[in-house]
Image 1 (tube, rainbow, N blue to C red):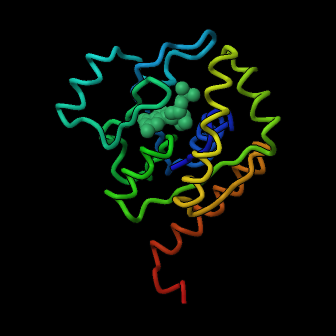
Image 2 (image 1 turned 30 degrees about the vertical axis):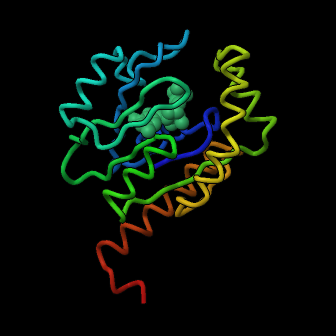
Length: 183
Ligand code: 5GP
């Protein structure tokens, strides 16, 4: 899982990771949020609240959470059997996944500074109110994020941050293939 405050670059990082690593499969979330101007239509499965609530009742989500007035959820993963599933989600959802899958690995992605975070939120076209809302929840997300994180990555440079994650994944796979190599 990639977690961290909105605007930290998790989405770009997630796309970079699946491009670079054939064994990673990126889950596509459902959301009731409106599509942002300029946002690609395949970033999410955009649905209305009634449809989302039906899917909750049908037990279709691995996890779901309400974030700033919108629902977000991970459908039960249906990627290739051999693949490692990559989720890009907020902290309440990450806690639920951890409870179901204690072996899940959590990368907390940090901005280089709060100023850079704010600048990125503005760049992606959120209005002032949304930017202020998201910045106000960042400290709590970071605190919970630190509790959950297996690894903390500063996203100051996309290539550097993704290389760091890929190398950790490689080590973890090595351990999974050969658990005794830990000793
Ligand atoms: P945004 O509206 O900026 O795309 O996403 C808001 C937050 O929801 C981000 O922190 C993003 O990682 C998170 N998010 C995206 N998909 C999911 C999901 O399926 N489940 C949960 N719990 N959070 C998600």
